Length: 345
Image 1 (cartoon, rainbow, N blue to C red):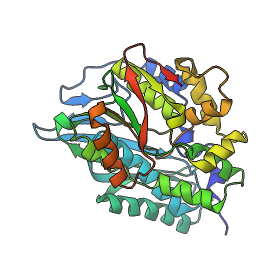
Image 2 (spheres, rainbow, N blue to C red):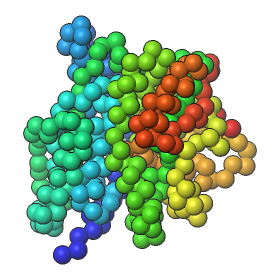
Image 3 (spheres, rainbow, N blue to C red):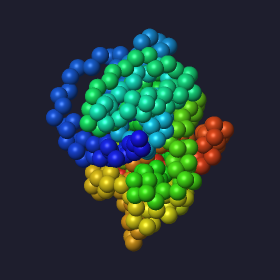
């Protein structure tokens, strides 16, 4: 029986996240309650995970991430979803310690062997990260869903919020952009085997350098680029830190196949929703082609780390990323005094 997982998805991977504008509206009515002093990172800064201080030496980092299939292969889907979930732990500068599985499957449509392969893919990534899947929860639903609740530990002073960047900080991106575009090409049946291999290589690579980067004094802020695209997650840093960002478009690392597809007009619906949610805060050069906008807003499933660091720390940050196999990592811009917005040059 030939099962194509993406046929069940209305929007795959991080592209199925609720649009930024809708999410803002939903959360606007959420009542603010008194938080315990031990909760040192909560919902106040749109950060990657919650952080609860346990003692003077340890803080618990907790997050959850799950989505619908971005690829047809069950094992690859499980690997991508698990890598993406654990990324939020690394983005806070923490070391992962365990995970819980979040599983929703249409049992009347998917053979049990397919579901087993999804779970096995997730387990393989957790093994690579050195953590167990210690439990979880599963339900019978109409659309396949898989992901993890991930937990980690970090020293309270080493937590890297997305709201602590500083004026003059250099911006470094760890993985190239274009995953959402490749997923759109896959759905259209035009993605080559080489393009698929590239997509899997990037989406299943753990952002392990985040743990080491947290120990560098020159690193001020960390996040990972996922469903809101580079522009959306950089804006979260700008809003939280109250600075402006300047991006050099020519310096952005791009997946070559994705660049070709987006110039042909292939992109995701999530990219359009992203621009509708925050496009007024992003300024492109006059006459810039629409495909540049599509790349900036392209939803990155299991995307790269976005680092804000001092100019003096730039070389060390890039060395950490390159040594860990992130060959495309590079500096893409900087932060400066001004209102929370992005200028693309």
